[in-house]
Image (cartoon, rainbow, N blue to C red; front, side):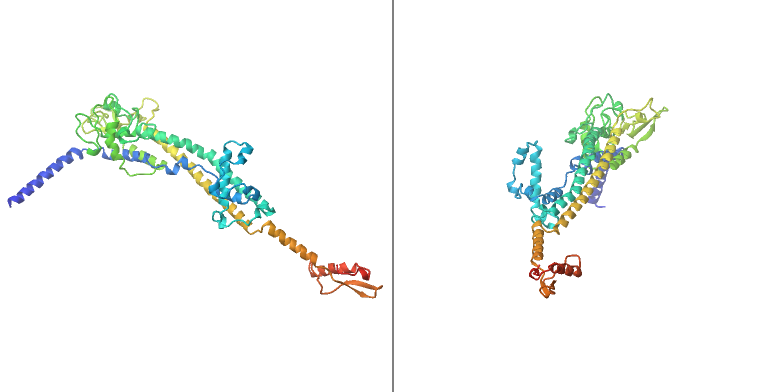
Length: 462
């Protein structure tokens, strides 16, 4: 074998040994890696988007479509009070001054103005058509206004019922949700701004006393520290090198520093939307990893998440160990009724809030769908009016018909002698039928006009 080949093989062997030593020092002791991953998934889920249950976006208003359709059906005298030019809005209407209304008057006036502006544009209206001029001032317009009152009144009630009921509850629950989650995850009332101050709380008198589920503040972020942080003589990285923090002393030290590096890794977990189902599933995954460990040399047991100390008794300091002790929540081990408030109960309450918020959003969807159906009715009423003719046109036609009827006279003629004859309708001359009575009735009527005349000098056209 050539000397240079031997040298290359030796170098490769040395590099391999160095790599194995590095892995041994950082990764092969990461016995809590899977437990940390479950914790991280719970944190990432809790930080997820609540778009589907956002109280701010759920408030309902009467759609502007109703306003502009209603405005288009109003009397011309009312519509003329408002500009149809958006650049000429009236910001100080005399209408409000005259009525001495509360401040809401100007807001309402602006709403009416917007409706009038929209109602003047064909592309804003149903069917992209404007109503014929004057149609709303006649009896047909009045009847249509009465007809459209029903869907508008119902739409107003749909909005009011939702906003004063489900939406109001959603606002309250939405605020509670943020408080519950921030408290359970990080021990804060509001969302943290950076990883360095994310985790609230300090260690107690020892690691054993601190790493209990009932220790306060009870938070998910502190659970991550309990699994991963090492102190003093501890050399093994139970969560791998990148996610293992350091606690200088488990005696009143702030946990935020040890959590900072862990938080950065937790944010790499798969993002999931914040729903009741996802939150409960993430919590269940964490709790399913709790294991029972027997205490070496005694009959006692401990229920822990992670790796307990060397004799399995608890979560005290031990090289290669790190855990969260859940034994205080084991009913069969508890001396009395368990009433402790922990991040588990807070997460469960947050999931319930999400569930209730989801129900409210379903009602929101139903309300929106109902408003759409009501507007379809309003559109149909509007389009029906498009088929009618303005009052002026109808009146003109009627006057023409009356004039025509009055201009047609019955032509009479006298037959027989002057003293012994009779007045009769002359056949084929300007005879008209009375509408709806048939030809015979028309002829008889016209003939009677002549026969009633008994003297020749009176037998004239009637």
